[in-house]
Length: 179
Image 1: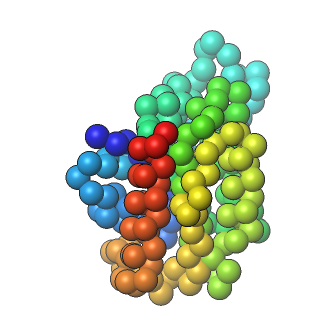
Image 2: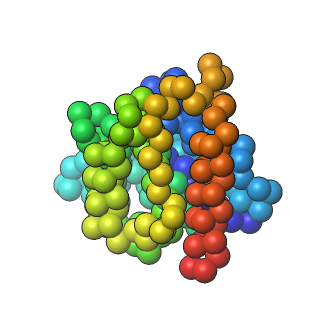
Image 3: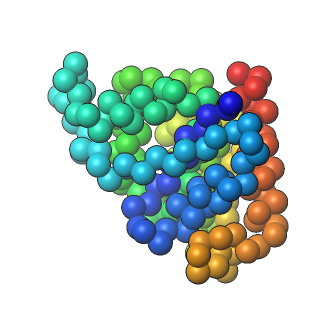
């Protein structure tokens, strides 16, 4: 069983990006288990002085979930032309421990804007690259005008978007198998 950890960069209950992560869980074939990491807001503010043998429990759990996954899928909104602080904070906790090193990773940015959150997307890809994550070619996606592509239950209603998500998932799965 292939294990993928999905991470939404938003804490909003009705987040489009969380809805995309949940859609990926539904789209996954039986041989892929996608788990949604739901504790982003529980991580303390990153402080290098806390990155020691006595890590906060939430950080230990975050690192363990990443370590135990075969691949990672991150879906983020864009705030003020960048990655939301809560997602950047979570990534900062991983810099020194290295759970992203050579980890096959897919990156999605979904936004109501016509550019799909391209600045946050580029920033996230750059941060993950510095952390030595393996950004899978063909497993990155910008989803513009996301509000028109989801129904009130958060389900993807746009067939082209659903197809792009399936392709991204298949591309990530192939990269994980090669890894």
